[in-house]
Length: 210
Image 1 (spheres, rainbow, N blue to C red):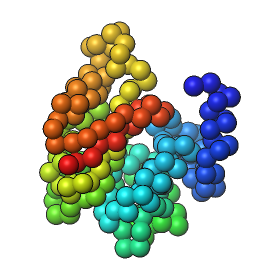
Image 2: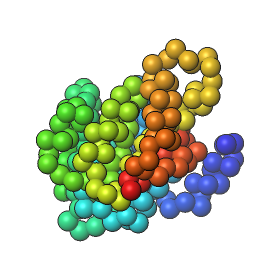
Image 3: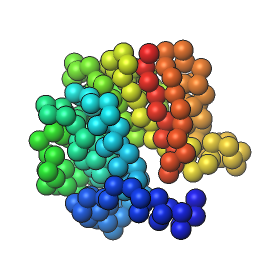
């Protein structure tokens, strides 16, 4: 993907809302891993997928700065709700401020805690789950999500190409890379789902529970 081609794609994609642009800028200025924010293209895709699926309940695992949560909440139908979990409590002050300052704050419940153990306690059946947490636990996270996802529901798993490391043997001993590879191999053989990997940014896998 050349810079020129990327600029062309963004010029022909729905414009990034000004509030999200400011959040993206702040994320890159004030956090160490700013590139983890979804950004313009992925954010607009997440919003459109939500508008297409029209879920009542969305689960997000890994809030980070709140960019993806706000993007998805923009697409929610009336009465829809997004529950987003962030395990790193050091992000709370930054992220909560941006979520609560957004126009979709009333659709988002921001929770500090481990989604693996805490999400099932909500006793909610979800229509969509966006997985963007610890890559080492993706398979465990997937099984947890499958247990609370409605039939016909969707899982969106982020970073499934992991900067191309999934096919680079120099990373064979990297635990996060191996977590992603194991996850990808696992769902490719899972008869409970249909799946396709989109080569968008760092890889986004769309998974449909049968």
